[in-house]
Length: 219
Image 1 (cartoon, rainbow, N blue to C red):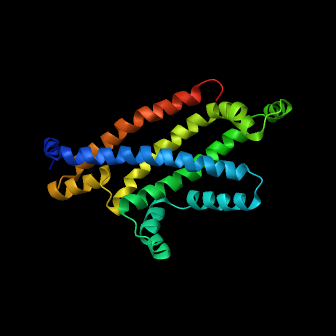
Image 2 (cartoon, rainbow, N blue to C red):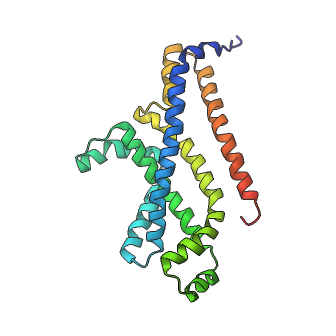
Image 3 (spheres, one colour):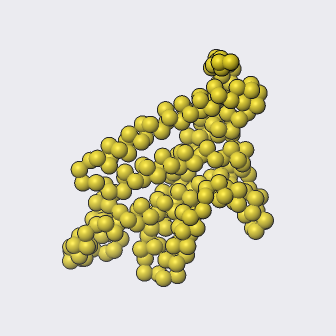
């Protein structure tokens, strides 16, 4: 028997869908910004001459890059409170996990952009009497940013995709709301098709932006 598609029933769940979109986009923006801040610190520490700091941030990067985000989310929510005695809400655990996960990648992107600047630029800045902080701010970072922007946008796209895992902690993101709608309506095909379309509508412009940035001369 041919399946009868019916998307009309989703209109009665538009409030749930709207909340899911807000959580998904909100978590993406918040964790991308916080991940960038932590990632900058991670990159600078790894480029520093402090051997202990370099070891610590290298271990941090490898741990978060080499373990699945889903495992990190579950561990942060269930195991971290046992180790620290601090109770975390699902939203707090999700924010912390995605921030640190993103920072491990953002940090490597930023570090790679900085070391890609020709050493002659560093030497020229030192010859002019610039301190390391001045050299970084005025000479190195402006050049490195042009190379970092495309991979940073790509990583932000991945951050948005990773928000779909928040439903495992009952954070009311788009996928979690879809699960609620499916449980109430028994129409998973329409529900998850709608979710896929919304994700595509959000992600497609970002992926096109990343491609355009990568295609620009100088990248």
